[in-house]
Image (cartoon, rainbow, N blue to C red; front, side):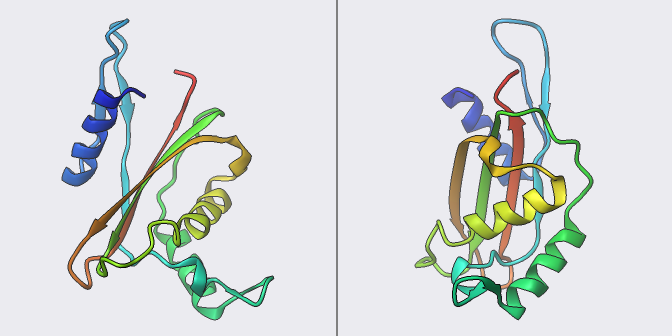
Length: 142
């Protein structure tokens, strides 16, 4: 994905629209769906007790997200994933929700994160109560 395609993707994520790109090399239209889940992203700090055990908060969060995620046909590996997190606190660390979000996506869509070769993450600041995360999964082989 070049920088022009990435800018189009980000504009459409902000608008909540599907992304349609037309590569310059061909007349093939590639459609990419952006999914938004209206839930405050969970921090990795809220996910495990000690080293191995999920917290009750993470278990509840995981169950809620799994129910909200739409059916989706996974593209073939290698994968590129775009994540956008809407935080109500500007000091929230951008990296805290990445691991739990990827783990939940893997569980729902049955892929292994070793198939991810590109990961783009964006942080947005939103009003309290309007927290969310958006994601887009594509194959790098187009």
